[in-house]
Image 1 (spheres, helix red, strand yellow):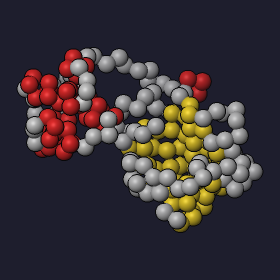
Image 2 (cartoon, helix red, strand yellow):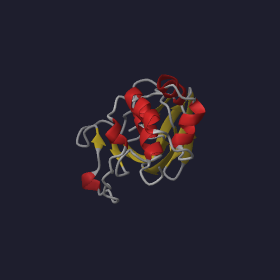
Image 3 (cartoon, one colour):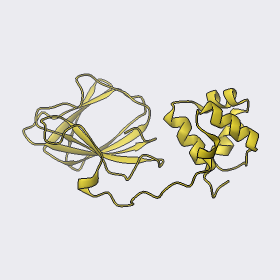
Length: 184
């Protein structure tokens, strides 16, 4: 099972669909403990169990056995996946990892002068650590508490913590994030 990464494939599909271990296990008629052990490569499931899990995850059984193509290991600036328009005076995000299939992702948020990441605070599943790599200063409103960060500062943001970034300066700010699990 380790060579095929069945557990990791099951876990990735489950997370993509926003399903908990308990929900998938119940629908597949197995225990949450069994599913967790499968995802961590500790047990080898029967083909019937795999078939039930594939059905719950709405994927053909053969997808669990397909060999994955290895992505490019190096991400060049011109090949980064970008959300938002870098040429527009608005916040945009660049994926710094080759894909979002691993257990962690890195991305860079670019905040133009006098812009904010959102109008209001937002929260999401997944812990992140942010590092301010360029710019004068940026204000992170974290759960209603404003924190001023300068280039070289970093901060941990807990999963589901409401937050919004504000760039009050006249200089573009760049913030690099490590996020787990990937949410880009």
